[in-house]
Length: 319
View 1 (tube, rainbow, N blue to C red):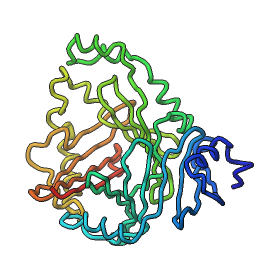
View 2 (view 1 turned 180 degrees about the vertical axis):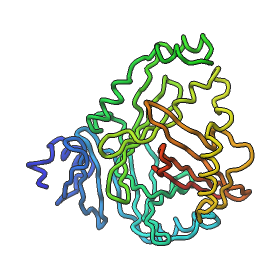
View 3 (view 1 turned 120 degrees about the vertical axis):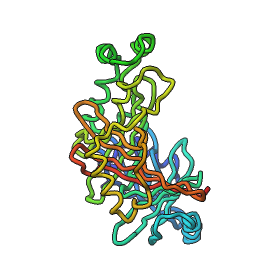
View 4 (view 1 turned 90 degrees about the horizontal axis):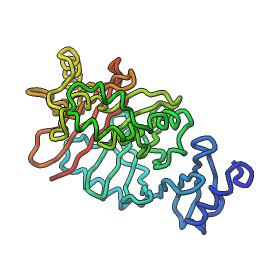
């Protein structure tokens, strides 16, 4: 792609202002007319910068072999089976702490590992492409979906069966959705996935996941509002997943090499297992924790109504 002909001048200017010594930039378009990636060498390192027309969203900079050793040290003592690390990079984003990311090959499956400055390690099959806090950087269909709900919804609040009247009145002038951020991922099949976070009636940030065709395929726990009486307890109480679904997923988890040490038994809370519903979309969400005095390890798994896995990730840290 020729930057002088096909990439907006504003995008080139944004990148060159941050990286004035960058030369021979090779551009690719990530979101039509909105988001672009520039690849170049700088000081002997491969650098990839993702930018919109107004700002840099993310930058990926090649890291040295010594940093791979440091990441491997962070994995010691965790229950996740050891895989092969490669392609380590430093991920930078405005207003965020730097993260180390790498390819993580485990039993023939390619994962993406992220080491956060807090010491937490996350592992997922999704590969982060870019993050943005501007709704204008997203496909028009997703943008319209969020904007269409960026207003109060008094009719819905009036139908809530349990929420106390003073709280309904408090929420009456709050927008149903306020856009917070979006992370765009590349999946193993090379398709894209958009994870959008919205502030729901000003109460909490909740996720929605769209596929590359801008179709909504999974929703967060928006329906939890329907079971609230007040804001004193936002835990949601007992799980609302049916016995049949719990039995099915529990058997799947016990048969998994990665999940067999993460029990889902005894009294199960809605925070551990939930059915999420919004806009005629139904999805399951499980948060499984491993009992341990030495480590803090967990899995989050998200499925659609047909029990198809939409997203999953591991996180772990030594105590």
